[in-house]
Length: 526
Image (tube, rainbow, N blue to C red; front, top):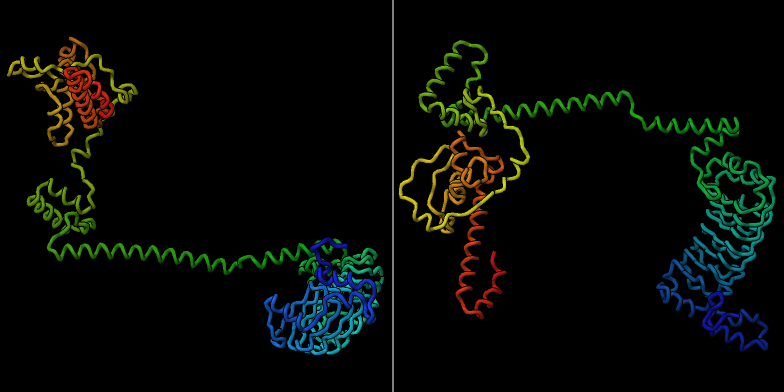
């Protein structure tokens, strides 16, 4: 017994309650289930059409979905005359009836019912698809008049003998048959039976016990049905058909050889013909030559336009004179004369500048520069090039000491820069030309007189002696490249120091409370 709130085959709880109410007996003589389960009435059909979004007017419906409703009989459908597809799957129907007025019916689905015999289709001559799977049919009969039937599904029924399917041979349009999952145990004559239906394209016969008694069942059926494209659970490809044909005449070796030949032929069809390959190669070469020719023509055109523009403006390119390359004496004389005039007008340096402009800014070196060998690079030293030497001592000159220095200074020794007066923050803030010499002079004026310029570090009492002992100042490459940056960094550092000293001085002179308050603002220094 079903639990509360459930249904049995689509039957509502109200119908089950009515069945329980009438269990004591029915006086009208009708069957208990027929009297109390849902009946296919016009009113119920209209409500189903509304529920499943179909037309409310019967004659407008061409498709009718009445599956999963638990109907016992097909009735009340006299007004549905234009239906072409009728779905009555998964009901409790035991007999095919009530379809006389559906002359336009093309597709009929009655799967999952309790039908035991095919009948009641005398008026449905235009039927194309008939699905009666999952019923209790033992013999396929009463279908001779369905001359337009193309697809028949009788799977999962109770057919036991092939002779019960003999009437299918009389259907001229039948090309799709599903007789799988029946109880046919017959093994003899299976191939011969289906070979009489030469128009078959789809045959599903698997699930019957008699297949195990048929030797080479699939190969023989494929050879017997030339139009077969799908058999049982997989399609029939051309390679399988060719292999089965070879197996029939030569056995397994011939079958495997036929498969190899088939694949070899398919691959050869995908290959490139020799003549076509040569044609494509020649066309590719011609395309490349054409592109090169067009590029050359474009380049010559641009040069001609440039020369014409210069000639139109009354100027002659300083780099001209290519005609003299041919070896003509007159051209060489004219070329020499033209160059002498240009040198007299512009000078040697002006000539080089103009030719560089015509060549896109490329510099033309002087003959002396071109002939001179490149200066040899000094040997690399990691400590010297990339790490500046640690300063032994650094003490900026005081203002009092600077004030006591005499106004006149003697000439500096070799390798030493000219001494300057004391430099403070105001001096670093002065505008400069941005050149490296400006920053270098400021840097060494800050370092003091006892700093060795050549080596980058100082020793007390030895700076002047070392500077006098050296002929030329030496500076690491990384220092030379970073003179401006170093000068700015040192100026910034000195300005910070002076600001800090001034702040400390103010705090020392201020009262204690004010000093403690100002000390909190030291973190805001840069």
